[in-house]
Structure formats: structure tokens, C-alpha cells
Amino acid sequence: MKTLFFSFRPGTLFLTLGLLFFSVSTTMQSCAATFDQVGLDNITNLGGRLTDLMAKAKEPYGKHADAVGKLMTELGQAADHAATQKKNMEIANSWNILKNDLAMPFFDRWKEKGVLGNDYIKEAVGQVGKSIDAIKKAELAKKK
Image (cartoon, rainbow, N blue to C red; front, side, top):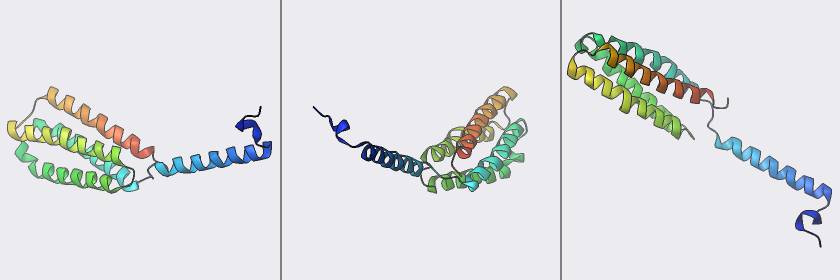
């Protein structure tokens, strides 16, 4: 009794398997996000500036209020850019977490308290740094 597998001639079997492999491999490539130089530039430029500004929370907030406003606007623009890219939902979500769950509460607390303690700043900068590193790693992992 012949099975379906053995009913094909060897040439037909290899041709079928080859076409299957080719279609799967080309489909899988189209599922990956393409490299986004603007996204990489955003995280590189904003990441360093964000942590540098956070480190200044030992000083009065009023001294840095304009810089905070400008940086938050730029973070919003970077998050919006990430959201407009195809197949980029995870990175867009990471930008929103960085902006809404890490940076904004930090700056709101700084504004409320006037100055922040070293331990709080160190912990917050560490968390933001990990988020920045994760976004940068995800951007670099995209196919060029």
C-alpha cells in the first residue's frame, strides 16, 4: 500500500518541498519590520539627553522646566513616528512606556517636589536606561 508521501516521484517531491521552503522563507521575511534610521536616531539622541536631564533633578525643577517640556515633546514625536512604521507595534509600545510610564511620572514628581533625592534619581535613570537599551536593541535587530 502506497502512502501519499511515496506516491510522488523523487523529482516532484523535491520540487514541491523546494517551493514550500521558498514560499515560507519569503513570507517570513515580509513579516519582519524593516530598518528605520529615523527610529534609531531618535533613541540614540533622545536617550542620552533624557538620562542627562533626569540626573539634574538634584537642582530645582524651575531651572530646567523648558528643557523638560521640549524633551517630552520630542519623546511624543518619536513615539508617534514609531507608531506610523509598519510592523513596529512592539517598538511603538516601548516608546509609549518610556514616555508615559517612566519619563512623565519622573518629571511630574520633580515638578511637584522641586528637587529629588539621589537614590530616587539613580533608580529612575537605571529603569529609563534599560528601556532605552531595549528600544535601541530592537531597532538594531531590524533587517537593513
